[in-house]
Image (cartoon, rainbow, N blue to C red; front, side, top):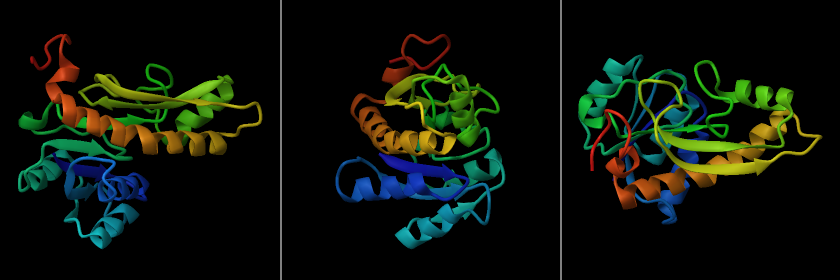
Length: 196
């Protein structure tokens, strides 16, 4: 599968993808990396890895770039804007969320906001969810979830570190599952969604 990676920040998830593709633990190849911020460290890393890398401010600009590449799957990797894909990729956008959906998700719930909310609520288990993105934040079909046990002494920062370690396993696993089963498999049975 040909992969487009959308990011907003440091590119830690891109680092993970790059390593796992190189060592054969993740299928596919990254054909383009796009950031919504020109000074995103992830863009610099992408260029260092040899990937075509661009800045684009909104979905229309992103889609003009994606149209120049043979993209099968769009991967949101710490991309902090709501993305509207072109029609052919409408059901082919994967996202990772730093909680176990449907808990601690929805508009405004991202990054450290999630981990602070988890800490405040005092839950004993958190984790991450890889899911297909649709028009509503964190509502598309779930592909993989990983649980993380929390301890009484955990801080929002330690929760974030534990969850990110789980994300490094979950996201490549989900991409491999999508490559194996096909995008439509995960949308079956959902109202108004793709058919098999």
